[in-house]
Amino acid sequence: MTLTLSLTQARRIALAAQGFGRPLPRRPGATTLRATAERLGLFQIDSVNVLTRAHYLPAFARLGSYDRGLLERDAWGPLRHRRLFEYWAHEASLLPLDLHPLLRWRMARAERGETGYLRLRRFAGDDRPRAMTVLERIAAEGPLTAADFENGTGRSGWWEWSDVKNALEWLFWSGRITTATRRGSFARVYDLTERVLPADTLALPTPSAEEAQTALVERAARAFGVATAADLRDYYRLRPEEGDHSIATLAEAGVLLPVRVEGWSQRAWLHRDAAAPQRVRGAALLAPFDPLVWERGRTERLFGFRYRIEIYVPRERRQHGYYVLPFLLDEALVARVDLKADRVAGVLAAPRVTLEPGAPPDTMPRLLAELERMAAWLGLERVVLGDVAAH
Image 1 (cartoon, rainbow, N blue to C red):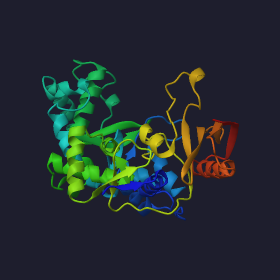
Image 2 (image 1 turned 180 degrees about the vertical axis):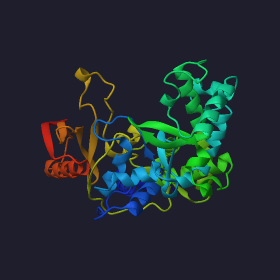
Image 3 (image 1 turned 90 degrees about the vertical axis):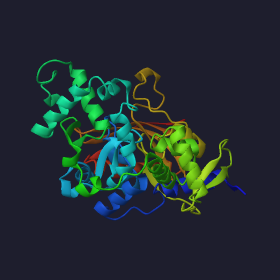
């Protein structure tokens, strides 16, 4: 018999699985940060820096004012401190080291030219010698950025700037190189994977593609609590044929339980260890690439909240602002906040706040408290609030 969940129950399960509803730690440190990375399974990377880079924000939403330097050390610090690595997961992401074996099948497919962007696949075939030339230079000279390749050509001058970048990205996608650190305007500094990641991580056994995909789906299910098959596949960007066999395997093992969620047209899956709290309390500003809201269809199903990022929308056509963060209050998304960090003026600017229908009376006081917390975390002196409007 298939269990039926109310939408409220499903929402609470999803929030708890994502780490919401817990009191903020008094002094979040390396241990709590790593536990958050493990719970979420990744921090998505994005280059936009109008507020702060996206990979910092999910931990702030769940932990409060943690030291961003701890995340930087785990991701790009000395080898003895490494706890995260960069790779393509949901999108470009920072991932716990124990996921490296689970993504080697994707690296192997990229190396064979079977996955990845079309412009990169040629380096698995006829243009492989050119990529090997790039790899040899990194091996000989140490960590390099794309710009280090003589600002436009290879050393011999026989190919275009875009070719250098694409060769580096193919080498990255195939796992031969990875990000040693970030430099300047967040540019990747590439090095050989064996010089960046701990030897004990690289020595972990490589599972079959099917075993790895099943493990990734299980991680996604644990992070979501309750989810459709499409949700589960999307977490680590699995194709239907890669994710569906994993769901079937996990269902047969009793790890995933079939459920119906009121109002959802598709069958859902509940992780057997998912907590089902009686209520969820707390407040958080969510990055556009936070796992709770990154899949816009799921966000609508869970919260009745239609969310689109408007960075690439012309100014005159934007509805809510340039870099808009949903505001989670207890169990609902109750507002949209356009945010910008003016570092020169020392201001966290919120030029527009849009309240959702039914936003509770305490929305603005609790939002202001969260904005003040964020400003202090970012080293900004004050919050400047602009227009407040109803949706």
